[in-house]
Image (cartoon, rainbow, N blue to C red; front, side, top):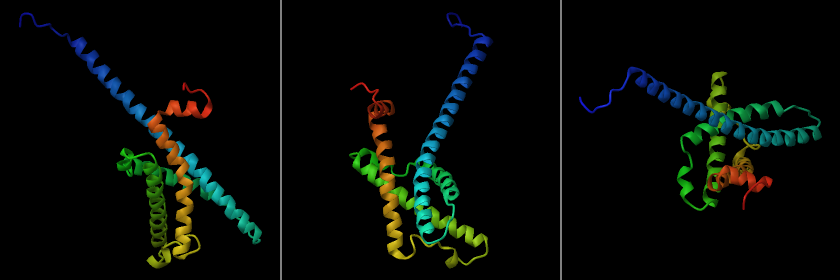
Length: 189
């Protein structure tokens, strides 16, 4: 017992309090990061779906129909941003990150195109079955129907997601501050 420092109960309480405080800060930092990631995904998807809805509205207006689709764009962006966040947390496409940047950019765009289309189909089927429709009647018509319509929508989504994943992967490789600096003129070169 001689030579061993005696730790007071007060010190033990302070150490435990500091550990709890540090854990709480980490949880809060993770929550803030998760909200930030979700908001970036949501805003990108909302702009994307908003443009699709605007295009659809213009086409329908030319045919004498006038529908407001912006509300659907907002709801779809919220739902698919959450799907995207969950898929990222499940590390979908992370295996591509060890390859040159073009692979994760194009690969994640392709993977998330498939995820979005599959989620849309599953969502419509579940809603249709809940309403008492048959499975066949619940499957949505995508892009006007048929393989050509499905491939057209998939190609539009794929190309539209490339800038999002290019920015995300470049940000990861260069560092978010450096990329922002390069884009907005505050970078040290």
